Amino acid sequence: MTARIPCTIVTGFLGAGKTTLIRHLLEHADGRRLAVIVNEFGDVGIDAEILRGCGIPACDEADIVELANGCLCCTVADDFVPAVDALLARTPPPDHILIETSGLALPKPLVQAFHWPAIRNRVTVDGVVAVVDGAALAEGRVAADLAALAAQRAADQALDHDDLVEEVFDDQLACADLVVLTKADLLDEAGLARARAAVERALPRAVGIVTSTAGRIDPAVLLGLGLGTEDDIANRPTRHDAEEGHDHDDFDSIVLDLPELSAPADLAARVTRLCARPDVLRAKGFAAIAGKPMRLLVQAVGPRVSHHFDRAWGEAEPRQGRLVVIGLKGFDQSAAAEALAG
Image (cartoon, rainbow, N blue to C red):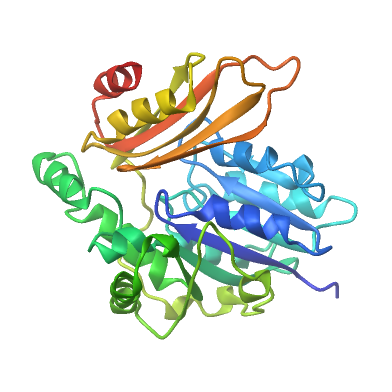
C-alpha cells in the first residue's frame, strides 16, 4: 500500500497570520514538494494571489489550489475532495499538502472529512496548527476592536450567537495539535506572558505553544508531526458538535475596486479609515501605485495596516486594484466603500 500523503491544516482567525506562515514554509521547503489548498471567505482569493506572487522558485502556481466563496468545513464533498484529487493526480504528487482554512472556518468538520472513502487511504492529517494573534490576545482580545464587535453584536438581533468571534476562536483551538502565537515582535515579556496565558486558558488539553514573528518558524516544528489527527478527532469536543451543520450568515464580504493611487501611504490611510468602522473585521487586497511597476499588497486587521510591494504587474495584466472587505452580517457596505474612497 502506498504511503498516505501528510496534510497540515492551518487554521486561525482573520488576520492572525496564516498566509504569512505558509509563505515562510514554502520559502524553506528544502527540496520538499509542497502543495497548498487555500480557502477564502468571499469571491476573490487574495491569499492565493499572495502565495502565487511570492517569487519562490520552488513554488509552482499549479501547486496552489484556490477554493473561493465557500468554507471548506461546509463544502467538503463539492470542493475539498476534488481539490485533493487534483493535487494527488500530479506527477510527481506533492510530498506534503498545506491547507489554509478561511478565518471563519471550524477545523473539525474538515478533519473529519479525511475519513471520506475517496481520500482516506491516500492522505492523512499530519497535524492541525492554530495561528493566533498574540498582539490582540495580550490586550485581552482574540481579534482587533473586540469591544466594538461586542457592541455591534449586542445591537444586531440578526446574529445567531452572542459570542460568535469567541466561539470560532474556541473551536479552532479545540482541534489544535500546535498553537503558533504570532506578532511576537509587538510584545514585551509581560505582553507575551499574557497572550500565552490566554491561549492556555482556552485550550481544552495540553498543546504546545510556539511564538513567531512575520511567520518565521522552523518548518520542522510544524511539518512531519505524523499525528493522524483524524483518528483522534472524536476526542476533541467543540461548541458546534450538536449541530448538523453550520453556516457563516454572521459574516458578509464585498469586493471593492481600487483606482491607481499616488503613494502607498495613500492606500494605507484609506484602509485605516475603512477598518476603523466597528462592523468591519478584515481587509486585504492589492493596488497599483502611479509610476511603480510593482503591485502593492495590503492587509489590515483593525488599526493594524501593513503593505509591501509583492511582485511586478504582468505585461498584459490590467493595473486594477481590488480589496476584499469582511465584516459582520449586514454591515454597511456603502459606508465602507465611502470610507475607502475618502
